[in-house]
Image (cartoon, rainbow, N blue to C red; front, side):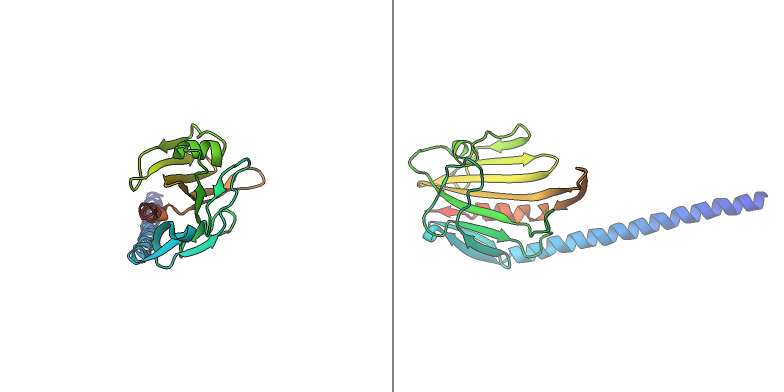
Length: 216
């Protein structure tokens, strides 16, 4: 009986050791995949492509390989009175290797240009009273620090459903609005999260893109 118990204890130790080894192997595989993804993004980011909107009044750079689709600035918010700038005034940017969002669509960054319309509003006033017609949520983080020496406003909204970044730059009668959601949840019909998409690995390159924006 004692011998049998001894073999049983050894079997348990062997099983625990096997689980630990499998866990270590799985973690190394996941870590290698993550590091490779970051390396691929860094390689893309080392080569930049120049882009322009509103007949060259607004320029910015994106990593080579990222898709930049020009289109009219959208009426993104109900009640918005923002007036799109003249010419090609918006772009939808898609990184080359991003994870599909919760709606099975490519992860996208939106860049839009709007007119000041003579109201002389600050970036925050324009975002809250003209574009979205709503004040920033208590769940968000805000800043009015300048970006590229331009008056600016940033609103980072965090809730259970998504993590969204909103940036507004103002110069020479134009507002440049940048928005993206790197993290987004998918809900079941029972209102339970069954999938969480994470594209935060692209945030550093998106912030570099914003830093590259020039407004004439």
